Image 1 (tube, rainbow, N blue to C red):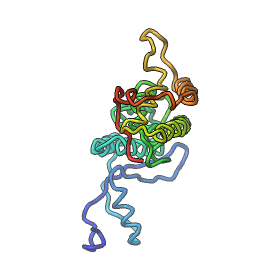
Image 2 (tube, rainbow, N blue to C red):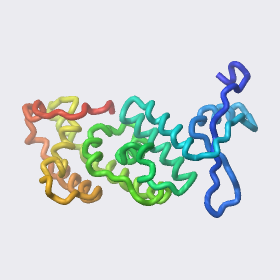
Image 3 (spheres, one colour):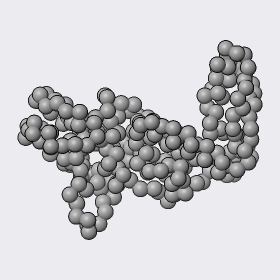
Image 4 (cartoon, rainbow, N blue to C red):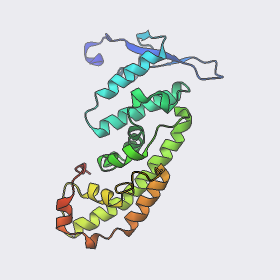
Length: 235
């Protein structure tokens, strides 16, 4: 649009982003990345912007953008983009951004979708909603923990995919195959209500162990017929 009409008519919103112990002041935009990228591509040296002094307003803009996401993948990717912005501009903790992030699971799933665009996050979302938690340290510090959680979840997914492919090789078909296998290895599915909650790492360890022991040859068509859950996303 900018190149077609030869005009830039829509100012972006920016806020100051000065890191601790650094003298250089930079600006970041919560809603103008596409326009900023387009102007850079066209060789522009400057851009018209409205400077908002309160970072909280920028956070609200980011949250509103995230609300526009139509499915789990889009939602998770928007949340992790917002998360990276928070990690870049300040010392806000995850637990201080509950309104913006909504669920800690979106952060972990967002990293998984970044690493593996065809990741079937819907199969794991119900489990993560009960396992994942907001961390008390800053987003900048917590990012490493989030990345490790995403890595472990992707490693589990590799095992789950192997079992799903084995089921398909036996002629078993269902839009819920991956959700079926995940449900079978879910350690909290029948966990007593008075049992102490499992940590994220402990639960993933148990799921990996259960996935390794999962025997596709024992699964019958009627077992799949009884299952529900989230349809597998297109791989």
